[in-house]
Length: 178
Image (tube, rainbow, N blue to C red; front, side, top):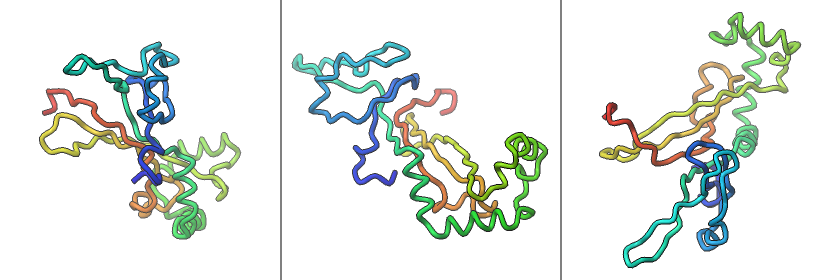
């Protein structure tokens, strides 16, 4: 789903506050990392859970799947249809309404010396949304997405041109929303 050969290739441990991201560590090697601390908050990387029978189990504080932007952008540029759509955006700028016609866009572009007018440059938009994959669950999964803003409006949201950057599972919804 994230363009990885195996889900573990994009699995990371992170702080619940988002201050540190640790690269994937196989479960068999977790015991060598029990002293790992998050850089900013100083919290422990793992919770130590007491199991029935008295054994201890390590559990990461938070797990996320993150494929990264570079891989996704490379995958998009490998698609001929993506290149053709970007070319249409620059060849017919009058067909791109909204933000690209706004004073803010023109002001930003002027400050950067017309950088946005160059077809060699791309404008990227990031977004996040929460979904509830299990119907009767009070947990959500946050989906982190990226899309190219320098595409014609009708093509910007096509599935083939939207990159899923990551998944953050298990955040509880506020009870007021249920």
